[in-house]
Image (cartoon, rainbow, N blue to C red; front, side, top):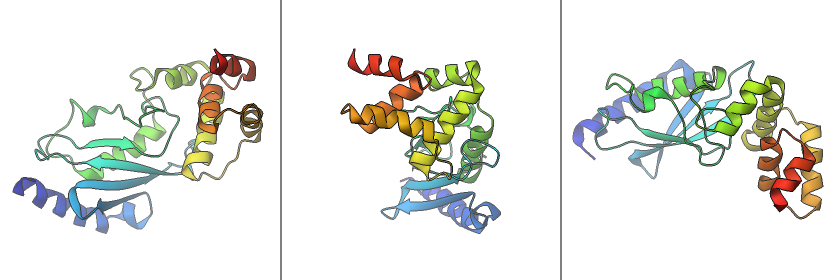
Length: 199
């Protein structure tokens, strides 16, 4: 790794460890295999959102050209959000692409991702299916996002209706993740989800 990049990341890492966000549990950052190019981050689901109470894990890959190019970040924790792929965890956020500036830091990026959970941009989606649900049925979107947060991110709210419908598909021999994705995609309509799975 380029010397300037390693020095910068070490400095940022120290600053993050002293930050009030780390002290308050809002974000964390740690090295993977003692490498300054591979990091693991977490963000806490923001209050008053369907993600509240969840802990979301992020894979962070820092290029040798950092800080002149942005880090590559994706969600490891599955999440139901218009700007995050429910399949790959890829994030649609302008500062991770064309709005990146060398003055930005890993701390500001993690906090920006946390803000994105509070303020989705459904008209610039990473996941079109999630964005469609967000725009057309906000209540159902919140139920689905809260359910995914409970299952994948340790969120506190179990959605019994969702769990019961998933159990029906499990009883048919369907894989749990496949059942959850189909039901989420088809607005928890059991008949339509079943048709999609068996078509």
